[in-house]
Image (cartoon, rainbow, N blue to C red; front, side):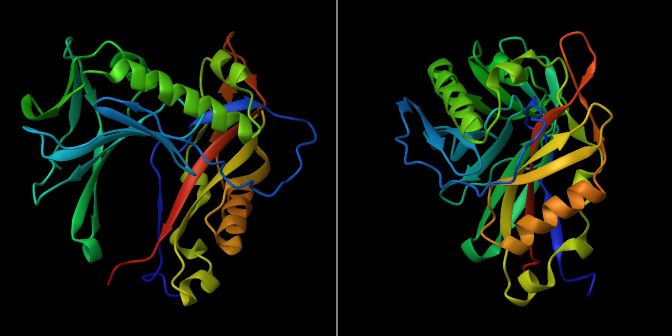
Length: 283
């Protein structure tokens, strides 16, 4: 396989939720996502997607880009995505965020996601700490910074009600995926993959490359107290059986993990979800 053709990009901070590992977990086909109504909390909208829950604020006077806080169901980690509108570019050189009032900087990784066919650039901010979502509840605004320079400010009025709906979305979908939300909340440390499930460019299925198939898959992965993968089940399919099966095969064989910890700080056997995106180069 030509190594320059396929490109696999894993969603950063890929571990988002965990629950006790069933001793006899059996693979099951992902159920279709039920129809849901997205409630509005002006000026926010809560969206229930196949792979995520999000709250979105549309562009408005003084802020010419849409802002979305996105999380995988059941988790505490949040990704921020900015979508420019009307030809206005969102700041892509941000290296820290500050929740106001307070202003304590949070270091982030920003990624430009250029989609040339639609002539838009999505800016994603990753590596937000688990406490970030809780800090948002009492915030008035979010500053996007480069060093000490404020590049943009996102108003957060009305965010408390939207966050409550976001949590409800997360818990509901987590239960649909077979996870124990109460056990999740009791963990003192979330499980993590130290090598992005072991996935590499060479793992892009040849059948998917031939048909120019791209996709995103979320898997529920069992991880023992010793940090070993014990089982893998796709819970939100990419639409490609080859991509789904490849993620599970590699995650089981080459993935490296740190186990979750219980309230006493002891390693426990858990189930976690990980999301991987398979995308071909645009050229």
